[in-house]
Length: 108
Length: 126
Image (cartoon, rainbow over all chains, first blue to last red; front, side):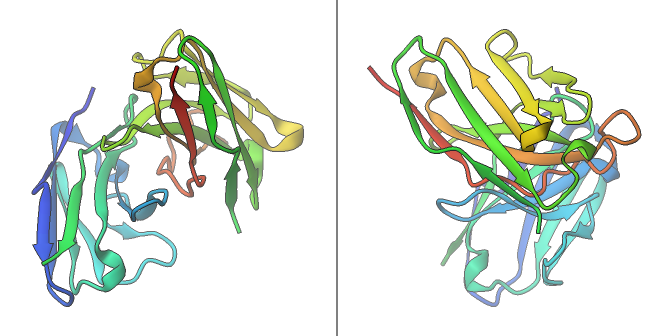
């Protein structure tokens, strides 16, 4: 199974700052099969990015995704209050479809 | 709009089974796969299995093979996930999520998970 490792585990930032989240895969992942999700406390995850770099419907352009092979990045250009949450990367191209351990973005 | 609505919270005793439902609306139910994912307290998201809502074919994570069964009722646009032989380690929130387009056969096209149901808390306690 493809193991996804996210770093850092926790990111402490202030509103308006830039957040850079990393996701590393144990083997190569097709760029078409890498997604990012945001999970607010007590809520279900919500798709932010699919295909490594495409924003899902309704997702603002402060969210961007890059990467290929085994290294992927989610960038939030300017943190808004609703962005303080946990973020997960996922590969959905090879069963079992696996998730990273998450990065918590907290208010500094 | 596309929406997935899950059944309510459950409390079960060890050794029992639980069946969670997920009713879909706002799209052609039989066109897509449906996944089940669970999240134990403080843990990462864990994929359990999926069903091709069109033909009923399923595939399960090896971890849950033999204990999980995913079915669907096309007349009700509803997918079910049954988990047997429950233990305390099965206490978790269980989510359904719409997956890929199955019209080409494999369901791997556009297989990102979107949207998700609201989640169903299953508590296993004696």
